[in-house]
Every structure is written in structure tokens, then in C-alpha cells.
Length: 413
Image (cartoon, rainbow, N blue to C red; front, side, top):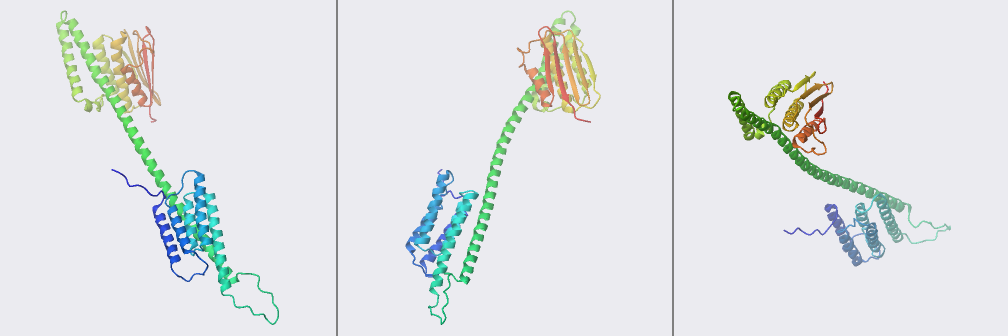
């Protein structure tokens, strides 16, 4: 679908139409015989000047200063031609249009120069008109009985007062018009800036939405890895223990199989209700102490290693930090069982006035940070900590065990 061709770049279409109305009025005055001071006029030249002056309003220069200067010079040339050669009657209307147009072209200095030119040209036109009017109405010269010097002024005082008054009113009109145009331009600029700001806000909102979506996906991935992954890991451990004890201790093996069956049900429930379960509190109305005790008990059953746990919670902890601590301990124990092969595990959780510190330490085989820094479990623990404004650090080396340290800032009580 083709769009209509724009034939004008005038910033405010209403003012363009108003210019044309004023120019049409001026043209009608040139064609009609009205009681204006009679000067040798050229109506045809004036009509041509008015037409050219009106068409120039369709395209206003807005780029290079040289184009603006040439455009204004052409406007002045048309007005001077219509004023001096054509003796156009309503010159003030063309001057008003000139000043208003240049409000869209120049800044303050350029506007001041164009206004000064308009006032000077109007003053000269009025002086010529009043001089002609005074010569036409001057009474015939009669020599008085006693010689008196003739008046030196060409314009009587009454006409001089009218001249100055008209110039003063014309200047006031130009000032008011410029103030009005400035107000319109300021309002237009404000609307454009507001529209631009709204567009930027929409762009930022889309970016924030994309970031939020990505963060939510990462969060869901962490939840699946921490909950379902932990359940399946323990499930596999129970099955392995049952297979080892199947011949020597069938009753114990049966107990491990029953526990594995229960873990399988839990994992299946997590899969079926993944979205809903991800939004549930994993502590399930338990205290942090009891929830971590359950994790330690499961770890002990699966590995025969009894972790030591030191909890010193001297103040209340926000729910989101409790969940993060629980998930980090859960993931830490899972990683220790999978990779560390330790004999001792120590968990420390303590609160201070403005922070909570979590330390998970084992004496396992350790690993090299340069070779294993992108594991999803470690990455998830780091993201959980940083999402709550905390810091996360891993201290390890091959053969030196591993120590996970997380600090969480706590709100002031």
C-alpha cells in the first residue's frame, strides 16, 4: 500500500494554512479598489510576489546553515521587490509571515535579525506612506504678510505620532507572535521527547521481559536439577545398596528397595507437577534446621557417612534465603557423594547481625577450579547466592578436599 506523498515539511500545518489566508487577503486588497494611500503600484508584480512567497512556505530549510541563509535572503528579496517596486498595500502581513517562518528556521540571534529587518522595512514603508499623505493634503502656499520660515519637517507631528504608534503596535504583535510560536514549538518538542521516551521505555520493557524470561528459565532449570536430580541420585544409590545387600541381607535390601520406590514416586510427582512444584516452598513448612537434618539423614543412609552440622541461627531469616541455603546444602551433598569420595563432611550455618554464612566442607579428592568451573550444580549455587545479593566462593585443589562458602546479607532487624 502506497503512502500519500508529503508535499510540505512545515512543522505546523495550521500555521501554513494561516499564512495562505493572510496572503489571499493581501492579494484581494491588491485587486480591489480600497481607500488606501495611492502610490504608483504594480498589482501584477505584487500578485506574482505573493504567489512565490506563499509557495516558499511549503519547504522550510532544516539542515545546513547556508540553505537557511539563502532561503531567508530569497524571502527578503521577494518582500523588498513587492514593497519598493510594487508598493504592496498590506506589507505588514508579509512581514508577519516572514518573522513567524524564521522562528522555525533560526535560533534567537537569527530571529532577532529578521525581526529587526521587518521593523525597519515597516517603518520605511509607513514613512513613505505618511509623507505622500502629507503632501497630498498640504494647503497651497500663501506668503504671509510677514516672512516666516517654512516648517522643516516633512511629516506633521500628528502623523509622526501615528507613525510611532503603528510601529510600536507592530513590534508588539511580532513579539507576541514569536512568544506564541516558541510556546507551540516547546510543546511540540516536549511531545516528541515524550514519544521518544515512551518508545525507549517500550524497548527497555521488552528487554527486561526477555531477561526476566531467561532468569525464570534458569531458575526452573536449577529447581529441576536440585529437586528431581537429587531424588534420582538418591534413588540410584538406594538401588545400588539393595543390589549389594540382596544376597547377604535380604531384609535390609528390601528396605532400600521400598525407600527407592518412595523416591521414585516423589520424582514422578516432580515431573508431572514441575511448574507447580517449582513454585512451592521446598521446606514444606519445616524449619531450616529440620529440613537440613532430613538432607543429612538421607545422605547418611546412602553413604554411611555422618556429616557434622553446626547451626547457630541467632535471628530470623527471610524465606528466600532459607530456600537458597537449603538448595545449596542439598546440591553440595549431592556433589560430594557423586564426585568427592570423602570420609568427613562438615556443614556450618551461622548468622551475624547483618549476614548469614554457609560453609560446606569435605576431605574428598577435590578438583581443579580451572578445569571445573562450569558445572551446572556449582553454577546454580553461585546464581542463587548472587541473586540475593550475596557472595559465593569455592576453595579446592586436587587431593585437598573442597570448601564451599556462601555469604548472604540479612535485612536489619
